[in-house]
View 1 (cartoon, rainbow over the protein chains, first blue to last red):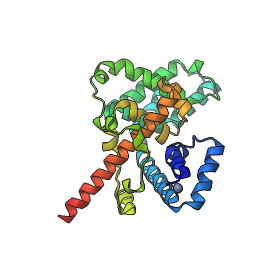
View 2: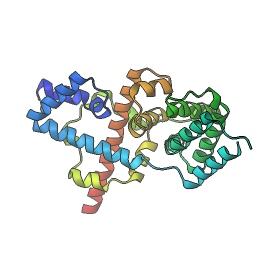
View 3: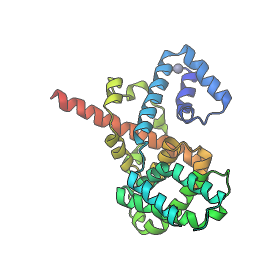
View 4: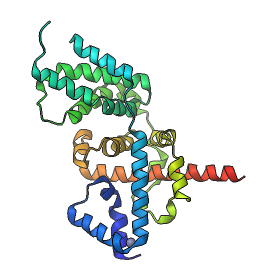
Length: 75
Length: 187
Ligand SMILES: [Zn+2]
């Protein structure tokens, strides 16, 4: 594992969160172009993250929305 | 009936636009539909009283979440004190975020497709509220580390480390359940 692979492993969470400074984003992405292992790793981490977040993004019940609407109408 | 001011209408619009987010945050604080609904209602009623203080153009969602969090901690302080921090989160040392490829369950696509909302909720439920809140705010609601830190009144570095550890914990749980499922199917 090269130092650049370790750099990716140390920063992939912040990369996924969009919290890496641009220089580090470029460093990660440059490495991905030449390292299939890291590319696959980060691809999977991103997919897992996307799926998890997608499944957790639920809506409020309609009944609650209606009752808040009427709370505002009365106030 | 008085005609509502423009400011007031804008405020109501902000609340309605953020109801899904508010309900998700409430649900993750109280973990059941009824109390979550009550907490959202209480937050809306409280925010209405403070509507005059609300400045258009500020982050309405962060403002509403802060109100909700205050209500929750005032009402549930006694209950939440009894909450035991999750074993899972403690087991995952911060060093474990250095995942190797072997950590992902195989076949990965099957793991991903088979994952259900109940699995993720179950994993979330095993995290302590401190860790769960960071996942919800950063990952689900898309707050930045800085916004989350401000809301939870903790340092940005703590947000980062909790988020990394919480993700790692959830990934271990989901992987383990998937592998157990595979073994159960084989036997
Ligand atoms: Zn690499």
